[in-house]
Length: 216
Ligand code: C5P
Image (tube, rainbow, N blue to C red; front, side, top):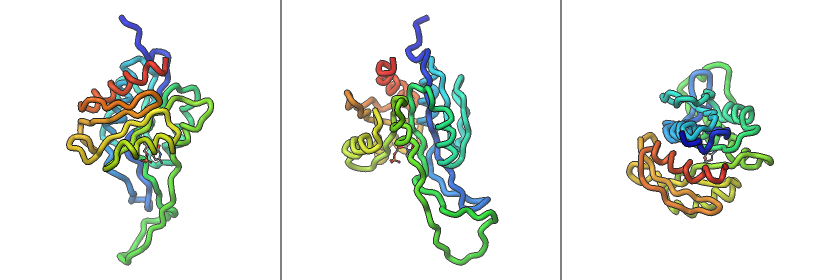
């Protein structure tokens, strides 16, 4: 059997949406299915890595051999990542983290039919925090863009200080939220490569094939 390229590596992946409570029975969230992140976790495990998948609520089952930590809010996701990131080799931030959360969460269900204003406060940027760790793992982030895709991806890579960004044009058919296929362009220190359109599992394998030599 050929040695697996990530056999002695630890990989932490975030996936899925976060849910930010409005009160004990309501939340704000987004349409992330978690499929791309789960595909990445599965592909890293196939290559022999020890994988921790920190996942917001999804309908997916954990890929074979992957340790899953279920979280709901961005703050819970950050805490789970912090608890697991030490000594890891690669961090993949694929979660659709809610950029904001309700500032105040009443302990009782909100009542009444009157209009009310909801104050939102920014959530921590998990990917940027991990990218700033020293020593820290190599980092791959995702950028879902609707226009000027490469320019925004390059800006995001620099702003967050990550090693790689995989950008995708969410207006392209078959490359948005929820589907089983994707097309990404990998932006990194030595590469700007448009990867072939494929299933999320195929795209995940292609991405990890590009990253694995840098982890060695
Ligand atoms: O800034 P934007 O949300 O477009 O960045 C997307 C990338 O940053 C994704 O890799 C996502 O997982 C990560 N991110 C994060 N924490 C946030 C917001 C985004 O880790 N609060």
